Length: 633
Image (tube, rainbow, N blue to C red; front, side, top):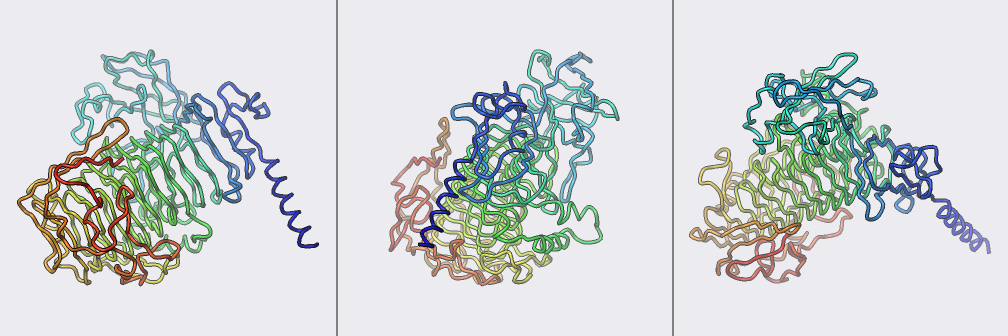
């Protein structure tokens, strides 16, 4: 009877909790003095964010909201989240910008506006410049602020004369757009902006300026179980997100766990779109503060500080970021130093990252993660960025699978100073450089790689490896190179005859000939300029065959068209499993799922079942013959 009574109390408590969960409504026509009901909505999202309790839902209705959402609290569990969502079927914009009117003609096509600093509150992006560890400013100031004409960002110039007399910027991907320019000066009272709008009258168009450093960011860490769904988020004055710094993108988690960020359109961040990373208390741009030590040593110190600050699977990470469209961000579409561990990043479309190219640095990519421990990066489409995916330091238990990457001019995938295990399988890597690895303990399985690959050691940096499926440090080591498994891939050997950068870059796997640790390479197909590993015994090479590769975009769909020869099916392969891949040498960890269960790579890029006895090399099990056309997005 006592057990029955206790169970009944639990059920009643759960029912009471559900009944007390509220749905707050927000509308541009509302008032923060209202009760937040559908009939009497609030006016600002942040007002609702101060009231919401675990289990509550905040539904935002159509319109444009210009605010920073700084939640007071998070949820308690997956069943008691705090959910922020756009109302079904309604388009909701949340912007880090303000609309600006009152422009005066200065000279020619250049206009001028004087803005009182009071509009910015306690943060003026036109008095703050981008800076941080591993940032390169190209010898000039870049403010975190930005100017937008009808949603398109202009190019900041360091001198007024370059606004009055604009010339195309040679480094950009949009030379015509680079002649739309702006310049600013700011004192204690006002900020003055000059802008070259060409034929447009800014008083008849929508002109906006970034006014907030972020859009959705809890100022205090430790707010877990938050969902952000269905918004258009843009135009924040975000700061450079170094791995040794507090990382604040337009959506930023601030060192917590179990957020879901889904079905959003995220664009036009000055630096990063989404950050899943580090908070400020464990160090903020510590290398700039003390250049007597190398930056890598500072990052090791930061790593141990985060461990003392509670970095573990129980406290940090385990986010889900899915189905987002992310573009026009000048540092990363998504980044995270240590805070992205144990997460799932899937089905995101990321493009036009670092497109303006007025500054650069060592933290720029479509996705840039440090310590992506047990993180799964799956079914993303990444194109027209510098680097596609950059896994830097401590990619252990990481899996990169079934992604589509193309038209990225540095490389599709860069693995830097990782000890593994890092599993890269069933991907389409179609840029001129497919993979750069300065790591060991990797596995390349069933990929289609169009361009070059580079592999080299790193004898001068000691980087951590972890206990399996944990943040706990097991040891530090340099990268000797090797300890790779390269099985059942297709190398198309397409691209320029010369090396993309230097002699370390090769078509095929010849770059692994000088690996220090053993490598296991078999079952691969090499076409055109691609060359096999020197000790490979089971492979097909057809240097006379040049595949016809074409990426075809039709609306929201992407198709891959390429030609197949008749020899590829003859290569002898094996079904790749955890047992076949063995363990990465330094961490002594198997290539397995994050829960420790074994992996069998028995499905292809499209989800089709693979042959158990002799699966076809490459990412497609039954692509057909001759010229084939496959939907890949």
